[in-house]
Length: 204
Ligand code: SF4
Ligand code: SF4
Image (cartoon, rainbow, N blue to C red; front, side, top):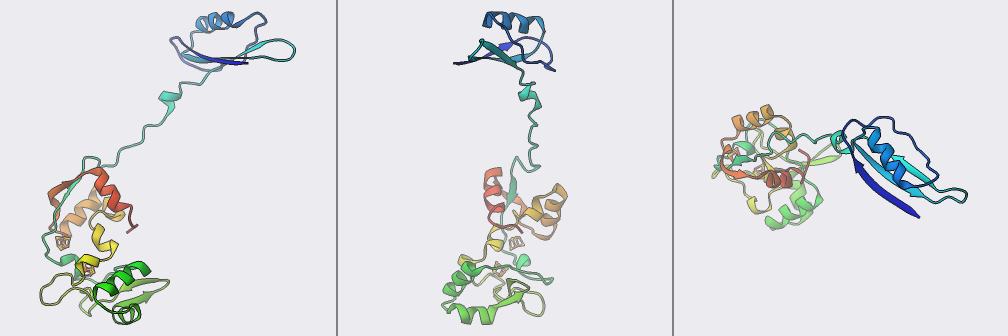
């Protein structure tokens, strides 16, 4: 048989030890109140020789639980793309793509995967990235319209900008992103959940 109970009294929990009473549960509760302790779980267990009551003290578990710090962007962030194309051009960089993304891009361009890879993808160590023009523009940025030529099938890295790990780590990282992307920090308010959904899609 096992009985558990909680008894609340004022005070701090410290070194409450196992106590044994030969004649019952009631004395154990009285003892608890006398000892001025905050919370106790009282358990009785039958033993083969004599009944025993175990008093265990959970040491203020609630107060000890560390409150998880809220991310600095818990109230959401604003973003509205102005289609300026700046994030697809300029200084050299990488647009990482996996096999699924390559297949989607190839399909969007009505090419077979090998032909697409040959023309638009480069190997970087063990990873693959889209090629660039010599001036650093993404190979899939239309040079005339300055728009993405595969917008509907653009890679996750492009879809999830600016809600990347690297832009969200600290407030100053976000400010930096805002300084290079005119759409970041303005327009629609994305909720924390929406941001997290995007951030978790890929670690960038
Ligand atoms: S830099 Fe920002 S606003 Fe301009 S195209 Fe990229 S995401 Fe949109
Ligand atoms: S794939 Fe499209 S959205 Fe992504 S960097 Fe290239 S042009 Fe820009």
